[in-house]
Length: 133
Image (tube, rainbow, N blue to C red; front, side, top):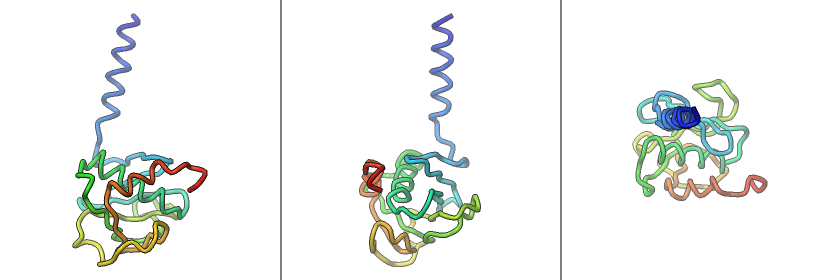
């Protein structure tokens, strides 16, 4: 009986680990990521802390979209109301530079359209001690 239970738990864990691009994705620090279109995804957070949004975008790009670490994340729509959930704090990202205004990173917390950063650099924000973000 024990081996059947362990096998069932292992199978259920594997099913939950398989990404579903059409569904919301839970990332580090409780942020959610929802697809907006084939090329744009929205990170829905709990406030305007830039670390959380960049972390969520990088985590989704790496684990779900499986892009290389060197890929560039671009903010296509800055901090505002979520298009997918209606929550107050969301940022839309894309990996397609043509879908975002020209720009460069002003600061981690600016969260303005045109800000950009590599997936690898943004993923580092997932490991900033939570009390410091």
